Length: 165
Ligand code: SF4
Ligand code: SF4
Image 1 (tube, rainbow, N blue to C red):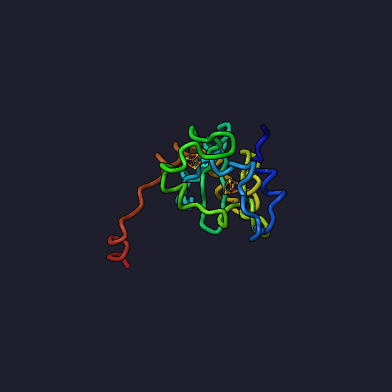
Image 2: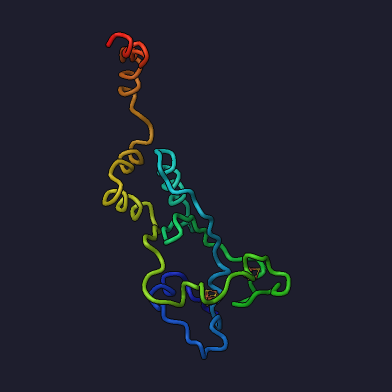
């Protein structure tokens, strides 16, 4: 049996039909991934970490109205075909999720940005966060920069500067 995958879901996204009595029929997509919310990246290490996620197979990153998330494409062990094999004892995170939150149904693109590859991410940084792109492409300061830091004259403490003025 074939199953609907994420790219297909996005292309075929449509409003939920209130008369459809089984909108999850033949799907099971939401049982095939795990998402974890990320803190909004701000510093060098945050942006570097997102690149690291994207270097792994079946790991994706997206931004939506709720912020940044990492997504792991991996099926739940309870998934039986396209239905839950442990419906009565499924985790709260599953029972709280309703079809009206589903990315399969609705208008437009549910994601502001969806990064499938490192290249997607670097292109996003190039367009929107050029400083972070520089951080990501140069994850460690070069030996020369380190040397320059070591040989730079020590800065005068602020209080001493005020005393001179
Ligand atoms: S909630 Fe959406 S993704 Fe999950 S099984 Fe139903 S239609 Fe598919
Ligand atoms: S426990 Fe059931 S509803 Fe929850 S992810 Fe697994 S298969 Fe889906």
